[in-house]
Amino acid sequence: MTRRSAWCALLGAVLLSACTPGVGDEPPHPVNRIILISIDTLRADRLGAYGYARPTSPVLDAFAADGVLFARCSASSPWTPPSHTSMLTGLYPSRHGVFEVGRELRAGVRTLAEEFGARGFRTAAVVASDLVLPCKRCKSTFEHYDEIEWERKDGRSGPRVLNRAADINAAALAWLGGLPPEAPFFLLLHYYDVHSDYAPEPRFARMFGAGPDLEPGETDSLIATRQGRTMQPHEVEQIQRLYDAEIRQLDTRLGELFDELVRRGIWEDALIVVTSDHGEEFREHGGFLHGRTLYEEVLHVPLIVRGPGIPAGRVVDAMVSLADIMPTMLALARVPVPDGLDGHALLPLLADGAAVWPELVLSEADHFNERQAIRAGQYKLIRSKSADDELYDLAADPGEHDNLADRERARSADLAGRMRGVLAGRSPARVRPLTEVERARLRVLGYVD
Image (cartoon, rainbow, N blue to C red):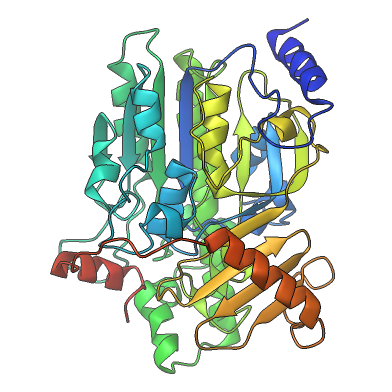
């Protein structure tokens, strides 16, 4: 029996009677090489492994076939800083405190890098934006922090958010190459290549019939729709083809990284998690970009786990959250999971995809702190400070166009009460004024008009 099959058989037997997360969830062979890959702005439904028809992701599709794919993972926030902080703390934004730029982690909140570092792991983050780890303590919890410049500085016209996956790969491999051969490590990799501006290399643009016109996919062009610019149907189609081409280009760069991990003997023993912080809008509800709504085109993100002992080819339909990543990684490394997290270790679902699971997740902290959403099973409630409640049955209405709030008042009230329970006792974290550099970078990314 292989190590993988033995691990699965033993873990499955232990967990057959488990009814809640955290019961019997200690792996017999803990991992000590761990890589978390975050592909910024990647919608789950644009990957072949999630059912997309266009060939955007052959590398990630093969990766999913060798691991466990979570079909319904929800982002903790529709934009970068709060969502990544939830990945790294196991807490929702209103608990970790980083729900906008300028906020710091609340006192007592520990990060994934801190937990691993305290137990002898070497830790590094190679990221394509300072928004991934926007607070000083987030950055300082990594032993090594490397930010790859992403914005055009030469004054030339054209896209400003540059594709830098090859540079991120090179920096990550250089760090790995400097480690002692048997050193345990945790490595965070963040890629901005799928984020607007959509500016794929010509060969990838041609692959998806996008043509050479990049202007519709530039962030400035997308922002202009908020001031009344009319986007023609052919431009919307061009934008989506450019986005798909960006995914395929990034997928190719990930293949190069994976090949090098194989060559260096890291691949087989490494736990690798691939996810995204949020998705992207393409006028499903009238807008573009992300950060301002809590619909599924922005919240439904991929989550794929592959590594020693992880079953191959499993698809888990249970509703999970990005806040589950921290406790899951800790548990797989046999590192104690802190008490009081919002996320759960997903080991029961890794061992048995049909395990009983508490399908209740929260998403919050849109760019204006205007909206919050809670999902319980197939139902989702969106609450806003300035608009009426929205209730959707995602099984019957996955596009979220039929608002049931007035017709199902009891269900709306129940979900609102459950949301209040999750949020009870949470208070604002301290904030500092934004710098002009931060405001400018937020503007380039479409968060500030």
